[in-house]
Length: 584
Image (cartoon, rainbow, N blue to C red; front, top):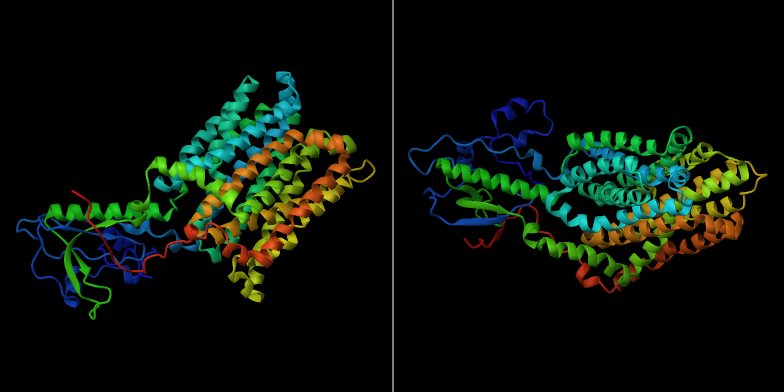
């Protein structure tokens, strides 16, 4: 692959540091225009500012041409220093250590967000007493949070496409800290609901966009470990919230649940602001084009007009060059519509896929139920363990350790089973359905855990037995979560974000509803009846991956959106696509 920085002269500081910087290799070091001109046939006559500008499409594989070695005018100024293009390197080409750091930082932000979702439930009893309302009414704060979490990504996605991940993370992250403080100091129930809604809106970026970050820096065949860490972080944080905040609510007040999150979110944001780098490739490429164009303008102002462009990629002489006035363009910038169009598409396409694509619909149904079961534990665990085992608030919160431990165990298992599959079952990973084989087996842990929890919820059975059942169900939820993300990303390619937005909307909306009806279900149906009912639904939905394993290729081949979901073929690497010059 041609290096996007090849051929540009570097600043003197780059030469001084090149021996210590692993990102600067020998092939990148500038040899000078004179040496290069001896190897190439250049246009003899110099260019002038009156000559036409030729526009070319820039890719990460484009070899950047050298500027003119001689000035076009007699009294030329000193040649301007070229820009340092290393910051615009394709995220796919980053070092492993840099990718790992970005992944871990993103997962830490996901844990903080998931912590926010689960921690609220620990303070519902105290809030109800303060505001003289029922526990169910207070629980609406979880519903408003998940509603904001479901809706906001579809509005924020276009801004991420235009401006990149980092600005969205910083802006929403700062608002996240402020809104957590609002939750801590609010004096009214309506104020809490409003604050929770907007908290869900701004915190959603640290969950939904992290999957995009992983896709930005890893190719699909290398993505499983990072996606496993992301999935594990979401579940780990969800269990960690009520675990920690159960003790806070027991020994202090519910307001300290939010004060704690102001601190943790603030620390996370400090790391994001100073250490998170932009990962969206199209945004980096646009910035690279602007930096090069600005450099060319400075060269021309100094009297050095033109760069030595290849005459033709298919020329008999690969070293042949022609002096041209050049400006770079990025195809994704031209294909992008207006902001209003992008927002309308971002709102319309997920629901279009949801109701026209069977794969999206049933995967959304599958993961929505599993996520709803996860949120159901916020009410079911305190109810069951206080009734059967006389647990206090902090003791019931400690039971959520099962979710966090199961998330860690599932993450480790997923990473190593993928490595084993690449060694012993490499052939099955060549298709999207190959990612479902493990999920077919492991997703059964969800209904197993639900049956187990229901039929061990008796006073005479030790508390550890139903707690282990929660861990079992969590492992099933993890496998479903990871399988849905990977499969939809593999099948829908450039439209994967819309397919994932559809399942995210359904997942969070249903997850916000279940806590409202948890107590009603478990009291009316009994603990055993509720566990059996939920386990039966989970067992039925476990058929979804099996159907796709056997009939997935046929379903995908006959899906109604085949024509418009086919991704365009990219330009061959290293080619120069000439675009029509825009009107002056």
